[in-house]
Image (cartoon, rainbow, N blue to C red; front, side):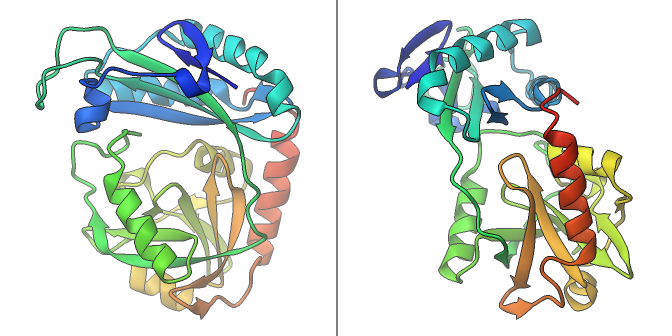
Length: 278
């Protein structure tokens, strides 16, 4: 397997970044994970748009979309034999580059790394756990897909210790927010709903497509009300697509998958199978 590092393809085992890279020392960077099927990246334009939005929010330089597209094509071609037609993930990471050992960013150009790996299949349904920590919907990183992921790592470990595959956050207002690497959709009163971006969740690409392709709506809902009243729920993300939730904190939902989840999964599978760049 090859990795693309600052303009060059290298063996993945030999890929390196500087020890003083700001992404390594303080998590100063942004990234995107793109699904690849049959050698083709899905929704690449939306992912690159979000990458550049995240970079602007951090005042971080990033290569142009055209330059990144060329890098994506070069990397996928180099790894075509290893990846085959199976689903894979492509990660694009841009960091602040070599910098002083502190919070201040240096003057070096950004570090840009592209890497690929197969996607392990998810089970047909998963359990989730609500974590005791809150997302700050007023923070500087709201809506930014940042490499500062320690909070998510801690939350996912908390969920795993309780037999769950994903952790779910409320925001500081006590409303349902998101998972560590997913957006959450729930069935309430026969409607499919998901938290609004103003509540602090990441603007997921799969989330956006589902809002366009289904009758799902954005609503603010207290987490306690969701847990008490949800008839069904699913996680949405680049690697999960539409993944039904079986139970929350050990309490089984009435249906998994429920009718709203099955309908959303069918629409997403059909529309995404076209292999275009929606």
